[in-house]
Length: 196
Figure (cartoon, one colour):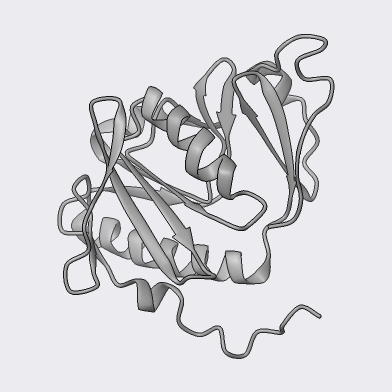
């Protein structure tokens, strides 16, 4: 996904807020706020976006077929005044559709998926996991294109616990009937250029 940077002035001046986030430019960077710190990263790689696209297609198709919710990629989510993220993928069940506003999602989605890369792994696996758990995101999936794995987790109390794959398939505990085959999420990458 490109380099990850924490804005150097984020803690020196004052914590960044949702209002600050609304004023950030719409450019080729991804701006997120965790605990008041502005985190800037570049546009995701081709492999990253391929995995997001395939997972979004599967999730959207299921939610539409069952008329149970909606899914989006790269939509802003305000978890709290000092925690604003742009997950790779979110799902919101119909009973929580009031959380979807013009500016994005206000409150916790039912499922968040992040595609991990070497430069974002700690942020995704530790910092975002703790933030998502604190705000009650029911399911958190870590999608790893390099290892071609999906680590699905469900919130139990204040911590995420793994959802064991059965026959290689991921079965959501939050979205009824959703079954994802990781092999399909990572399929079709043999034509992609390899970085020099």
